Length: 302
Length: 302
Image 1 (cartoon, rainbow over the protein chains, first blue to last red):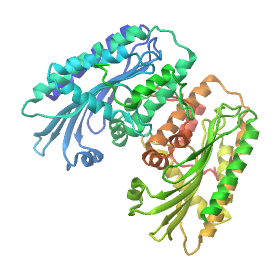
Image 2: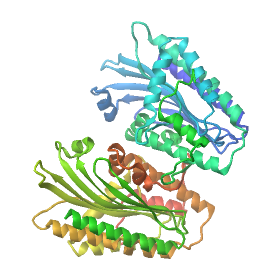
Image 3: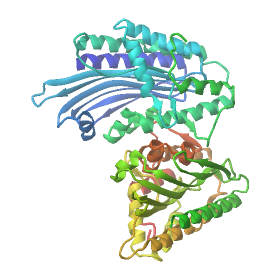
Image 4: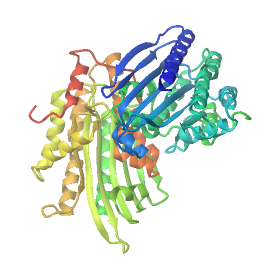
């Protein structure tokens, strides 16, 4: 399974970066291959200063060896060996009318002393962070997520949509990071789902990514915008930083387990602002976004 | 003691903000008075878009009531009442040749069920974060810290300088946030130090702040700088954000105990950049700074 999924994410990384380069028309992804001293490594691909993408990364990694101490505590296990691989992507577009997107699909194995798999699961999801809210974009993104989920189980979309709303939440601001999407974790073998079934589900989600995001980019990337729109985008990006550095478990794990810092922090936006006590004008488009981030919205039937 | 120290920080806030306004010559601090629903409140003073200070805050607060759950866990105590007051300041200058500075001086009391003080202590410190390193500035800042400390105890400066180096450290980057200063905490009554002695020490340090920082600002504020210097400053400010959001206990406590978010996060810089895998040129002034942040420097005898 691990080889099969790693091959899949290698292929998916190629598909996604090719398509994004074609859309951008200017910048190309550059690649950093890196190795983890304790075992494994990754292929980081970063795009910067493009026509469309101001900064973004589409990274894959496969790491293995002894489970680091902080993760042992987290999982409540003793000294064990593990294997983890996944694809992580974050795209920060230049035009404030185009939303930021994040996606991550991963697979994890834990072994006993004889090297036999004692536990394994899939996890992941994708979520959208607009700066200006177009209801039809939010609807489109969620509709693609739902269609992909529904092919596997009708409970998946409502369940994982809810998890996503709960997870990507800046509790210190009482607002969501964005308009959500999917978030699933610890997808283990069960009576109704074999690991093969989960593989089919997760790859279906991964395969649906470009369909969920690209039409939105195409539709919004040439919209005009003002300096004020740009300032708002940079202020909102500050909230993105706050979430990733204060609340995101993946980022904090990476930082505390000696992960490759530059690959982990490629998720941080290029230009960011913090303005003291900023509040958008009443009735403005900016305020409309904040309103939508107050509590979860049913984007399918909205 | 709590009234005496609160009066002191009220007065110090006035002294510091008046002086900084005079130096800036353009922007004025504006004041937000706020109340904490559970007890107490504060006086936040923020300066933005000045000639010299791009963003900064000099805040005082006095909060009291039941000790919040997260702090009970931290201190290992049961349900108790507390009182805490302090002054916190962060200044982010516009000119990359002027360092960012942070200072905080605080007093804490805990009570038993009869309302009697069962524990009390002072804490605080100040530290400097340059973007371009001028050895004489680092020396001056530390010399003022040392002179103030030495009036009370010759072991204070080396001890609190070391604490500062250890505390303001971005472990995920293997580098210090800046060139340090002083950091002290849990300054309790002892054989050689009464609370009155600690009060005299902490207020000596607070009183020395303007002397430690203002001459550096005056010397550097009109130095010419390039767009490239400014980019470097914004990238380094990113490290400041990383420290405050990932490692700083005060910030995280504030965020997790329902503190006033805007007063806590006034410490974040105004314009910030994250550039993937940025490394300064070999032999450059930027690289010289990084070298100084690798391991603690004896700035007094440097």
